[in-house]
Length: 386
Image (cartoon, rainbow, N blue to C red; front, side, top):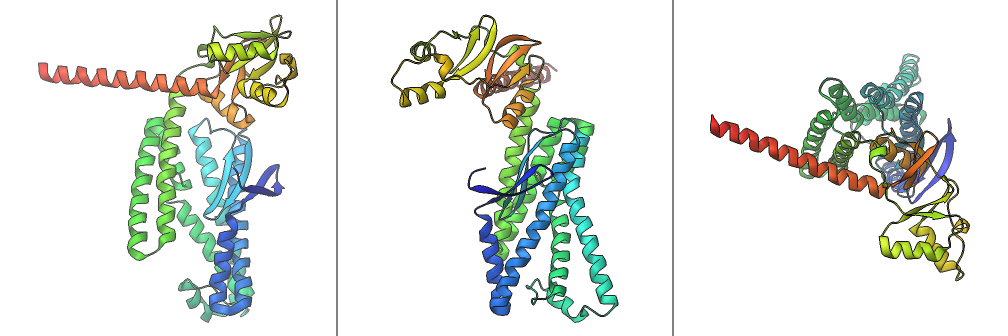
């Protein structure tokens, strides 16, 4: 994600901070300063930073659970409204998604349990003052102290668990709901139900936020509503693309290049065929890939008619012809590439790009709509005949 930079790496997972993250730290400092002056401002910023340590541990819970199922984790990004663990691919089984989704809130339950034990012990021995609990109950920033820090973080972790367990897709609770439903009614219908419920809850949250003047709640509602819609589209695409193998989707009539060809030949191919990607062959063996972007960079930087071997990508991703289009799409996302080479064993078949997959999805969607229209017409005809 742009505008982010790495601050650490834990268990092989990059932890990144988005530049907008510092807005929430500034707001914490302002809130603390309004109640307790300059020291309170520093304390408020510290509380927000410690809260996001808990958020990071929450996201690491997701990430480590995902890696236990062989799912790569690209990175964790901290944003003003929370964290985001970016997985290399979607869970292939409903119960995998269930475990991954539940792992995050479970981390906050453990943190809250430890803080509760610390606070309970401190109250029992008279270290903490029970009279300050009323201030915490009013939601105010506590006065700078170990007691205030402990109780505020305890409260924050409890709220994190409660918020994330709301069954509003794409929150953790919504994902847990989707995974449980998917075990019974299938992934596609489960996604639709979870999305509908999530967007309904988001609308209610948005209305409450506007009425109460809590614009942060309204903003969260907008993100949930949009996120649920995006997850629904992703779920539908995932289900549909799983019905076709990449071995049935690659271009069998694609133009190819030889290692002795030059850039001018690729330019001619691009202008006359509109094909954007070309396999560079040596005999029957694929040795590289030349894309339209490679050609444009070469033309911009060198006026000579170079050999294609001088601009081709020698490292490329191979996928088996038996893989589904959704599996290939996830491989592309994990590897950060838009084109892959399709193989049947050791035999090269052709190239497939993300644009090819998008076109296949459009065709599959059209065919499904046509089938639904025919089924609806048949139902109407049957009803009329009866």
